[in-house]
Structure formats: structure tokens, C-alpha cells
Amino acid sequence: MERSFDLGDKLKVLAAAARYDVACAATGLRGCRKRRWGSPPLGVCHVWAEDGRTVSLLKVLLTNRCVNDCAYCAHRSSVDGPRTAFSPEEIARLTWELFHRNYVEGLFLSSGVWKSPDHTMELMIRAAELLRERYSFTGYIHLKVIPGCDPSLVRLAAHYADRLSVNLELPKEDSLSRLAPQKDFQEILSIMSLLGELARDGKEAERKGLGRNAVMPGGHTTQLVVGASSDDDVSILSTAQRLYEEFKLRRVYYSAFIPVAEDPRIPGVRTPPLQREHRLYQADWLIRFYGFRAEDLLDPSRRYLDPDVDPKLDWALRHPDFFPVDVNKDGRERLLRVPGIGFVSAGRIIKARKSRAIRWEDLPRLGVVTKRARPFITCAGKPDFEGLDFSVLSEWWMEGARERVLGGLVGTGALDGGQLRLPGFS
Ligand code: SF4
Image 1 (cartoon, rainbow, N blue to C red):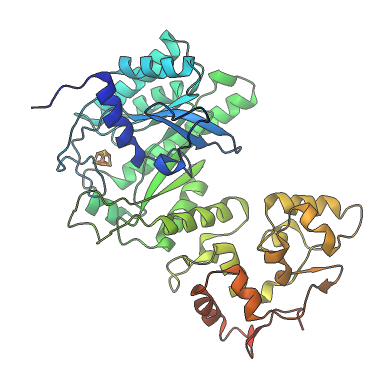
Image 2 (image 1 turned 30 degrees about the vertical axis):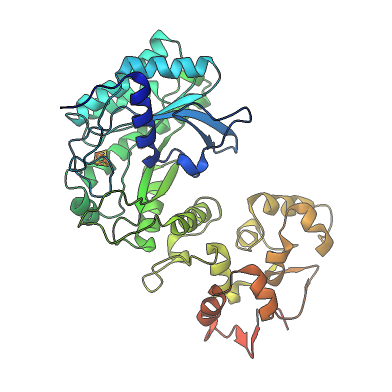
């Protein structure tokens, strides 16, 4: 028999349970920051919005009850533990109270599958409806879509939510059917396709100035679990790239698998692969904003991102023929390939060189990290220094990775007598 919970107990259990759902690239317990005047109330999490602002959300599950038995999940039906659920009224009231007192700007609501996907989705929609209709709530609402629910419920959820997301969890169909037998990969993709349509409508409505009446102005996202299956980084990044291109996702979030309860279907994982998650976020960023393709970064012969070298530097070191890039002549696309030149600094370079030629001493002011960029660029027609020795390289990446990266350069012609030779450097 389930024990009874008061509202405080429910909040304790269901806020802790929500930490497995990613609301932004740096969230969960790691990303939660304390307010200056003390700890945030239970369930309140501070996340970073896409424009760099910190946003506080009430982040909870509707319930941690679940009829499914996904091997990577702490709430799966075969795991013992306290189970409880909020009512839609409790969620709406709690969110409103915290919003009203300026503790949160919105709600992030996810859930296990309670009785059925439709039943769960209806309760989540009811909570959002109460907030919007009864409390005239103008804050942000992010709802998770429960895979398997009726498409009409997805449309209804979009009516109330700023953002919807459906978790694909694993990058390949066979991995998902092995680890989450009750889930259907193709069905999740068809929900994503519907969400893509709704997000497009939302964008159009926003463009027409319909503001809050816009459907799902925050678009849709998904989450991939990293390390729960034997899927490599090639599969993860290729799938993410496909989701961006085909279904117009706003974001793919990567969640390092947290081993909570053992399952024979999961490879032996002792600690969450946080560094791998971090490198995937960096690679994802390169795909979304820097014109990289998943296949630029990895291929079947290099199936994992290097844990010790950021993916952009790694790519640059493997493509010496591409360099040097001339900061006074080359276009944005080439500038963005240079380690140490970011999206903003590339824009500044292009703007600044319209009035006069850029000199080496101008680069830091334009936001270029010269320590990283200088071996890969020329400025005013000349490189900054002759060749590149091991002592400089060791400043860039951690000991241990150095040998491996340099090992990868053997045979490319870039290594010569202990010196890294890049074209244009004598
Ligand atoms: S359906 Fe969701 S909550 Fe239920 S076991 Fe699977 S991942 Fe966990």
C-alpha cells in the first residue's frame, strides 16, 4: 500500500525526481544556484535561457509513478521507492504561489506514465490550463509530452505551453526498443514532426505580433541520455543533427546517465559520464552555430569526441591544410573554424576590417582569444610566430591528451622534427 504524503513530502520527492529531466544545458542540481539571500525554495531551479539570462523555474514531476520499465530510468516500474503524485490543482497553486512571490518565472513539468500516456497528459494539461485560466498566469510553461499520447492532446498542450518537449532518450531505434520496450522510436519522431509544425505556426504567430497567443513560442526540444547504451558519439551527434534539420528542434539536451539502480541491460557505468556530456554540448554548439557537420567532427573510424580536447581545436589540429585563416580577408565561415574566434568575435572582425586593416594588437579588443587563435591565423599578411613547439601546445590542452593528439597528426605532414608545421608557418 502507498503511504500518504502531504504537499511538502510530495514536493520533496517529485522535485528530487525531476533532476533527471534536463531543462537547459546546465541545470539539475549542478546548475542550480543559490539566491544571494539564501537557498531557493524546494523545487526551484535556476537555469540559463538561450539569451544568457538566468531564469528560475519550479521543476517537478507530476508523478514518479510509471507503468513503463525503461532500463536507464530511476522511476521505472521495477524499482522500489516512494511513489506519489501531485494533483493538477496542487501544481497550479504551488506554481502560482511561487510566481506571485517572485521565486519563479515559470514551470517545468514532466512525469512518469501514470496509468496511460493519455491519462498523464490530460492531468499535465489540466495543470497548465488551471494556471492560465484560473490564475491568469503569464509566466513560462514547459511541458513534457508523454510518448504514446493522442496527437489531439499534443495540440491542446501547445495551446497552453511556451515550450513542449518529447524525450527521444536514445539515438537509435534498436537501442530504444532494447532499453525501453514500451516506447516506440518512430512514434516519438512523429510527435516531433507534429511539434515541428506547431512550432512553425508559433513562430508565424509571433512574427505577426500575437505574443502570448502564439502557439509554443519557445519551440520544442528533446533529451538524449549519454552512456546508458553502447551508442557512440557518432550516433548521438548524427541523430541530433537529423533532429535539428528534419524536425526543427530548438535544442537537443544531453544528459549523462546517472546509475541509480542496476539493470542487466545497461553497460557497467559507475559514475555519470559528465565530461562526455560536456564535449557533446560543445560539438552540438559547433553544429548549430559554426557550420560544422557531425561528420566533420567524427566518423566511423573516430567514434568518440576526445575527452581532453575541445572539438573545435581537435578539428583544427586534424586539418592543417585548412589554415592559416587570414583575419583581414577570409569570410565568416572560415573565421568560425579558428579556435579562439567565436560567433561574436567573428562578427566584430568583419565589421572592424571594413574601416581599416586589423593588426595583431587589435585582436584581444575584438574578443579573440589570441593564445588559442594565433597558430591558426595570419594578420596583416604574416603569422605571429615561427612554428609551434611542444611547450606552447601544452598550454592548450591537458597533459596526457597531448601525445594522443600529436599521434593523430603523424602522417598528415603537420609534424616535422618535433615541431608542428602548419601551412603558412615557416
Ligand atoms: S516512461 Fe519515463 S518515467 Fe517511465 S520508466 Fe520510462 S523514462 Fe522513466
